[in-house]
Image 1 (cartoon, rainbow, N blue to C red):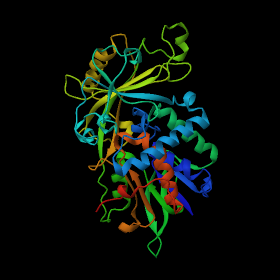
Image 2 (cartoon, helix red, strand yellow):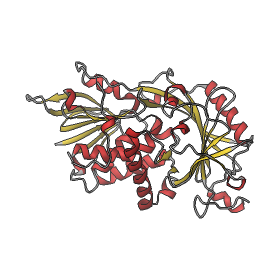
Image 3 (spheres, rainbow, N blue to C red):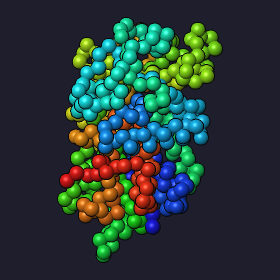
Image 4 (cartoon, helix red, strand yellow):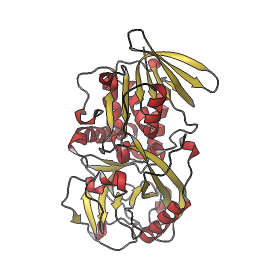
Length: 408
């Protein structure tokens, strides 16, 4: 019997990746990945910051955070991630003053996630260790070094995972929707119907995984309109800019640059994550990626409407203007904007994702993996590994997720 995964973003692809990889016993030929958006990775999976942390999490997330960070590191080492998706160690810093009382606060109020850092004993960074691209003046405190924080290009990471799944031979339905669920007389999950542009097919399955990001509650209500279960997941929109700066050149242009190599890689300066405040009242987050890109975000809204499909997104010109002004203040005037973006993160009031088998809630065969908020990229591989274990009923999942169940 097959496993059907709804959502081909970073969470869904990670689940399919580890479910189709040894020690998994599931043949790739019985894994179905369904994505409704015409464009792959059109929301948070492709437009997020790509910042990774190992120990910035509350107790309920600590085990999963550590597992996922280690899996990111291993995946990069085994697949040349530094080159393929810009995996690099990163130094986490606080510039001037960071707003917020708890790490979860930023999910609803727009403050910085840097307060989630476990190490509160920040130290002033030496001038020669400051990011070469930072033009702003002020105190820069180190929150964490590269042993526990890292950086990736999330779009390229997603593309690597997806290409691997295609090569392994799993079934990709894109664009497509699961339109209905068929139960056996016993009440157990029997099959789903999947509709594409060309046809509608029935796929017998014993497991259905909902990993559709901010759209997960809507998918659940469509498929289970009479269920008493509610998924307390909402959307948080965030605008962003992807930039190039003459002070952070790509590898191709570094041969003529005066920038010296640092501890990031042998060829390039180290990456940094900067969490700061802005006079306009929000908490910018700035991340340098290797090679050559700088990403700025932090302007978030829980009321910015979630579109039916990620490709129907509308970008707020006012938000982009605010981000541009912040970028010029912190990074200088000579910036090239390569991409303006908006994406929707799935968030919960508890500030932690829901990773749960709904069998105990009366929905046999259904697993939910959504609500990761700002940490979707960081927690993705760990979530994929754990959910693959849940699907196969393994005794050891690799992380303690008891605090991530669906609270009734």
